[in-house]
Length: 531
Image (cartoon, rainbow, N blue to C red; front, side, top):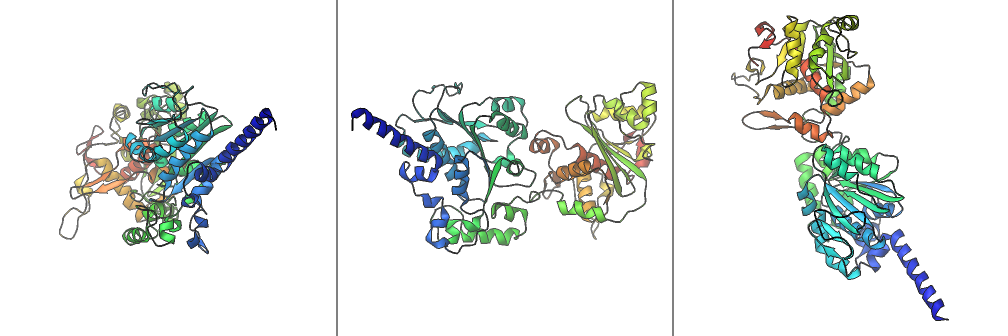
């Protein structure tokens, strides 16, 4: 064999090995990274003979292989099941087998990046250094060779072979979303840690920028609820979905802490006793399942659903109004009902908050004649609602809508200020059963209790409006203390909804409050004497 033929044969063998590394990541893990594939492929461990899987079979191994086959992947995982360990090996693998590749790891907060994935990368970097001697490790950057730039604050991402940590933020920051869409490479892997908390605009930007043939996305996290960004991503048609249950983990199956610090039977039992097997916390953190809502949600989905079959009660027509003042930003919403029956919800852009009042006062023909902006919503007359039973959020831009009613001598219910003590229930000793920091918290709590006790009948024909109502009502969280009950602030809810304001939920909260006619006699010129 000539030297030329020998060189060609060696090149062919080398190429074949690299193709094998790309297509079979566990082969790479064992033969190049020198780690045990049984840490990923649990079914080949002796104790798994006859094991009945609670989640996906071999979820770590199969998820990694799905990536190697060119799929986007979602992993909903229980806590303590080696997902961060797996992610670190996937980062090393992708950088090693694809020259000039880019790996972007992202999480909502910098501390989440540093304490989890990048901490694991730092611990195992010495192994990567053995296979890539020119590799270098920085704070949130791992360079696969020394040709990449040294400036950590301004990397030339188009010409560098590296992994970078990208802080997504917790809200819909436009700059973050724009920067997220700026990552491009022929071979690129985007990993989102803590995906349930990732802002929607950033997730959308990642999906839009992953247009190349080998542009992959791996979304991972402990599921929060069926409306979080991890679960929604997992339902995309081009995504392979895996679930990691603690019941399938080696420490649990083998009843021995073979992997120190990870989940054990004892830790499962503690959470079973504390939360119960059907609780959202147990389903999420032990079985890796997306519950219908968070464990600390103010309103439960089943309470809303049961109100579809509630008994109708007669009463006044009423409306709740959540105000906006934007051409293309937040929307306004109006919830309508008769007695205890919620019948209709309108959500729409509202560039003029004062004209919102006139839309409710005048019908469509009158609006046109008077030259008011028409929002294509029914008037109070159309819906048989007396202005005294209209509740308007009087904070911020809502003042303009309240003043619009005042100009027409219509004292609607302007909702603002602190709680109303006279409508807080008392116990047998005459002490308040609850206290609230704000009127908003009190109104939300009252809706919660009315839904929980089936005191509201939901009769909304528009399925899209009903779906919006469900998605927004189960999002808010609450907390209790000796001082008062607190409901999550609107701006915090908005962040977790990817920037969308909970207009529909707020409007329904105001409708439920306004329909009861609290303090109607105390209103003077449209402003409540008690807030």
